Image 1 (cartoon, rainbow, N blue to C red):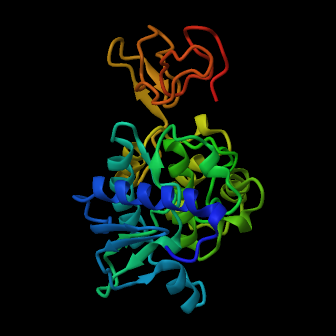
Image 2 (cartoon, rainbow, N blue to C red):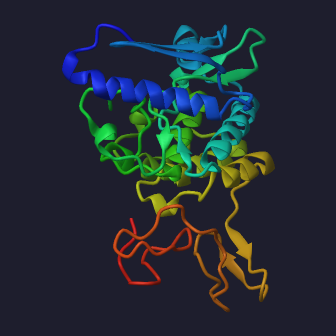
Length: 293
């Protein structure tokens, strides 16, 4: 980090320090680069990282005329990326990657293995939103950013949106922006069309992607672990059985429709009004009745 404008120096240094802390905490993960050193000298700073020889997937797509990658390979990569996100989100507080896109995924020489770079925007959940929306800092990694991240209110499910956009581009060769302002709705239309361009045998993946490209964060999967499970099973889970009364419920509601037993985990984000904890999928706080984002 050199030749930084004086007025930008504090924010840039903070970003560099935070990136070092994030990478240090991810040292044991296979996909993340290893941090060897962080050097800060006056108005300059350096990250000493593992060298990863490879080509970013966006560059590979472009070089190949935007021909999609093999379907099975995309699913395999999706599972590996879910492992990385799940490990980040499991930290306390959860770490958000916030920059998932083909340009931040490197394809190694064997043509199959991948590694992930571009941890510039990664940070703990709850960090002051100013650093997300600063005009000179937010431009990176925003290709697949969901609405809540763009306005400075990201959460773990924001990474699932970006993951879905990334897998869509790898599976189709087309950027998710080509789906328009409402990618989930447009993808749903394509799935419903009698002459759908999406291969019937791969329909389950595009349904999974459409769910996670939803603008409403509550309509997405709750966790990277859930996405991974459906990628491995090659299906979209639509129902869940209550462990208490065996009632079969739709997969997203936080409580059983028959006995009110909780069906989902506690959300990492407390109610903004009363700081009470609620189940994932809750739209209103059970403590004060306030609207949950």
